[in-house]
Length: 155
Image 1 (cartoon, rainbow, N blue to C red):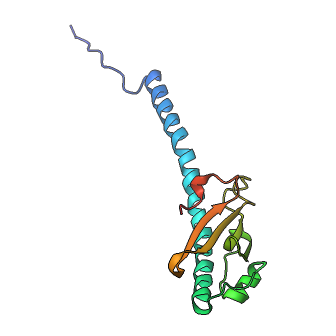
Image 2 (cartoon, rainbow, N blue to C red; image 1 turned 180 degrees about the vertical axis):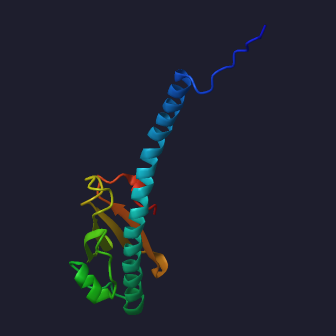
Protein backbone atom coordinates (compact mmCIF):
# COMPACT_ATOMS: atom_id res chain seq x y z
CA UNK A 1 0.00 0.00 0.00
CA UNK A 2 1.28 3.40 -1.00
CA UNK A 3 0.89 6.37 1.25
CA UNK A 4 0.03 9.54 -0.52
CA UNK A 5 1.19 12.80 0.92
CA UNK A 6 -0.64 15.94 0.07
CA UNK A 7 1.65 18.77 -0.84
CA UNK A 8 0.51 22.34 -0.33
CA UNK A 9 0.07 24.21 -3.57
CA UNK A 10 2.44 27.08 -4.24
CA UNK A 11 1.32 30.67 -4.83
CA UNK A 12 -0.52 33.40 -3.02
CA UNK A 13 -4.08 33.53 -1.89
CA UNK A 14 -6.45 36.19 -3.14
CA UNK A 15 -6.46 37.89 0.27
CA UNK A 16 -2.66 38.19 0.27
CA UNK A 17 -2.68 39.76 -3.19
CA UNK A 18 -5.39 42.23 -2.20
CA UNK A 19 -3.43 43.26 0.89
CA UNK A 20 -0.30 43.90 -1.21
CA UNK A 21 -2.31 45.95 -3.73
CA UNK A 22 -3.85 47.98 -0.89
CA UNK A 23 -0.41 48.71 0.61
CA UNK A 24 0.94 49.82 -2.78
CA UNK A 25 -2.09 52.08 -3.24
CA UNK A 26 -1.55 53.70 0.17
CA UNK A 27 2.14 54.30 -0.54
CA UNK A 28 1.34 55.78 -3.96
CA UNK A 29 -1.25 58.14 -2.48
CA UNK A 30 1.44 59.51 -0.17
CA UNK A 31 4.29 59.62 -2.69
CA UNK A 32 2.60 61.29 -5.67
CA UNK A 33 1.72 64.60 -3.92
CA UNK A 34 5.21 64.78 -2.40
CA UNK A 35 6.76 64.21 -5.81
CA UNK A 36 4.66 66.99 -7.36
CA UNK A 37 5.57 69.39 -4.55
CA UNK A 38 9.30 68.68 -4.86
CA UNK A 39 9.11 68.99 -8.64
CA UNK A 40 7.58 72.47 -8.30
CA UNK A 41 10.19 73.47 -5.71
CA UNK A 42 13.00 72.38 -8.03
CA UNK A 43 11.59 74.47 -10.87
CA UNK A 44 11.17 77.43 -8.51
CA UNK A 45 14.90 77.23 -7.75
CA UNK A 46 15.57 78.11 -11.39
CA UNK A 47 13.42 81.22 -11.00
CA UNK A 48 14.96 82.28 -7.67
CA UNK A 49 18.48 81.76 -9.05
CA UNK A 50 17.69 84.02 -12.01
CA UNK A 51 16.36 86.65 -9.62
CA UNK A 52 19.49 86.33 -7.47
CA UNK A 53 21.64 87.13 -10.53
CA UNK A 54 19.63 90.30 -11.10
CA UNK A 55 19.91 91.13 -7.39
CA UNK A 56 23.69 90.72 -7.46
CA UNK A 57 24.02 92.99 -10.51
CA UNK A 58 21.68 95.54 -8.92
CA UNK A 59 23.62 95.48 -5.67
CA UNK A 60 26.93 95.94 -7.50
CA UNK A 61 25.63 99.02 -9.29
CA UNK A 62 24.25 100.43 -6.03
CA UNK A 63 27.54 99.88 -4.21
CA UNK A 64 29.61 101.42 -7.03
CA UNK A 65 27.41 104.46 -7.77
CA UNK A 66 25.35 104.95 -4.61
CA UNK A 67 22.17 104.87 -6.73
CA UNK A 68 19.80 102.12 -7.76
CA UNK A 69 19.83 101.16 -11.45
CA UNK A 70 17.10 102.67 -13.66
CA UNK A 71 13.72 101.00 -14.01
CA UNK A 72 13.67 98.10 -16.48
CA UNK A 73 10.24 97.32 -17.91
CA UNK A 74 11.03 93.93 -19.47
CA UNK A 75 13.67 91.21 -19.78
CA UNK A 76 15.33 92.92 -22.75
CA UNK A 77 15.82 96.08 -20.69
CA UNK A 78 17.26 94.03 -17.82
CA UNK A 79 19.69 92.42 -20.28
CA UNK A 80 20.85 95.75 -21.69
CA UNK A 81 20.91 97.72 -18.42
CA UNK A 82 22.24 95.13 -15.99
CA UNK A 83 23.97 92.79 -18.42
CA UNK A 84 22.06 89.77 -17.12
CA UNK A 85 20.46 87.17 -19.36
CA UNK A 86 17.33 85.59 -17.90
CA UNK A 87 16.05 82.12 -18.83
CA UNK A 88 12.86 82.62 -20.81
CA UNK A 89 11.60 79.05 -20.44
CA UNK A 90 10.50 79.55 -16.82
CA UNK A 91 9.86 83.30 -16.97
CA UNK A 92 7.18 85.01 -19.02
CA UNK A 93 8.26 88.48 -17.96
CA UNK A 94 10.46 90.45 -15.60
CA UNK A 95 10.85 94.05 -14.47
CA UNK A 96 12.73 96.17 -11.97
CA UNK A 97 11.80 99.48 -10.40
CA UNK A 98 12.71 101.74 -7.52
CA UNK A 99 9.99 103.00 -5.20
CA UNK A 100 11.34 105.38 -2.57
CA UNK A 101 9.09 104.22 0.27
CA UNK A 102 9.76 100.52 -0.40
CA UNK A 103 13.10 100.03 -2.12
CA UNK A 104 14.30 98.40 -5.33
CA UNK A 105 11.90 95.69 -6.51
CA UNK A 106 12.69 92.83 -8.88
CA UNK A 107 9.55 91.13 -10.20
CA UNK A 108 9.25 88.05 -12.41
CA UNK A 109 6.18 86.31 -13.82
CA UNK A 110 6.48 82.54 -13.91
CA UNK A 111 5.46 79.92 -16.45
CA UNK A 112 6.13 76.21 -17.09
CA UNK A 113 6.47 75.58 -13.35
CA UNK A 114 3.42 73.53 -12.39
CA UNK A 115 2.17 72.08 -15.69
CA UNK A 116 -0.49 74.74 -16.15
CA UNK A 117 -1.53 74.92 -12.51
CA UNK A 118 -2.88 78.47 -12.15
CA UNK A 119 -1.75 78.67 -8.52
CA UNK A 120 1.84 79.22 -9.76
CA UNK A 121 1.98 79.60 -13.54
CA UNK A 122 1.18 83.18 -14.52
CA UNK A 123 1.84 84.47 -10.98
CA UNK A 124 4.65 86.75 -9.87
CA UNK A 125 7.53 86.52 -7.42
CA UNK A 126 9.26 89.61 -6.00
CA UNK A 127 12.62 90.29 -4.44
CA UNK A 128 12.78 93.67 -2.70
CA UNK A 129 15.98 95.44 -1.65
CA UNK A 130 16.06 97.96 1.14
CA UNK A 131 18.99 99.67 2.77
CA UNK A 132 19.48 99.17 6.47
CA UNK A 133 21.76 100.85 8.98
CA UNK A 134 25.38 100.93 7.96
CA UNK A 135 24.48 101.02 4.26
CA UNK A 136 24.02 97.28 3.90
CA UNK A 137 21.25 95.90 1.70
CA UNK A 138 18.50 93.57 2.92
CA UNK A 139 16.62 91.43 0.40
CA UNK A 140 13.05 90.27 1.07
CA UNK A 141 11.11 87.62 -0.90
CA UNK A 142 7.38 87.82 -1.60
CA UNK A 143 4.93 86.84 -4.30
CA UNK A 144 1.35 86.59 -5.51
CA UNK A 145 -1.13 85.82 -2.73
CA UNK A 146 -2.23 82.70 -4.67
CA UNK A 147 1.22 81.07 -4.39
CA UNK A 148 1.59 78.58 -1.55
CA UNK A 149 4.08 80.11 0.92
CA UNK A 150 6.04 76.85 0.87
CA UNK A 151 7.21 77.75 -2.64
CA UNK A 152 8.47 81.26 -1.76
CA UNK A 153 12.03 81.37 -0.35
CA UNK A 154 12.41 82.23 3.31
CA UNK A 155 13.71 85.68 4.18
